[in-house]
Amino acid sequence: MTERRALYELTESVVQRRSVKMLRDAGWYVHITAQDKATRKHVAGLPDAIAFRDNHTLLIEFKGHNGAPRQSQIDFRLAVNKHEGPNLRYLLVFHPSQLRAWVRE
Image 1 (cartoon, rainbow, N blue to C red):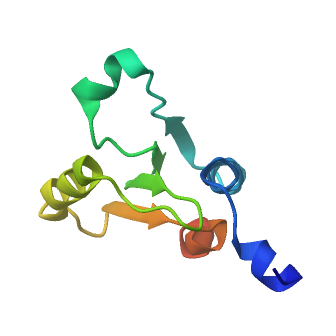
Image 2: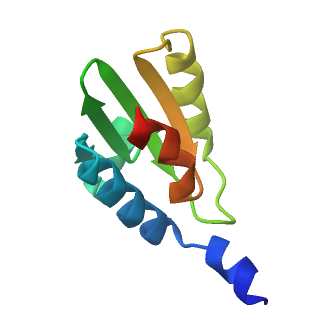
Image 3: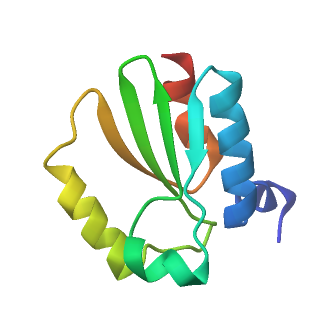
């Protein structure tokens, strides 16, 4: 594996940690929607984090470099899709760099 390729092959936990730090440093309030096994079935599909700043809300699902959304996450995304607009966005994030536009706004 080349060094360049390794830079982008991050685990989900690393993507989440770096992304949350970047958003918080930019003034976003970020709530991690951590789930334990007992509650997971009741909130299937809920994204990993919800971030708020000004009039914007981000629903963020983090994935590692080889990650793929589960069916419950796809279903949640489809349900939210009709409500998205300039103030509500659902993001599937594989690398913290995907959030740069939101950090600058």
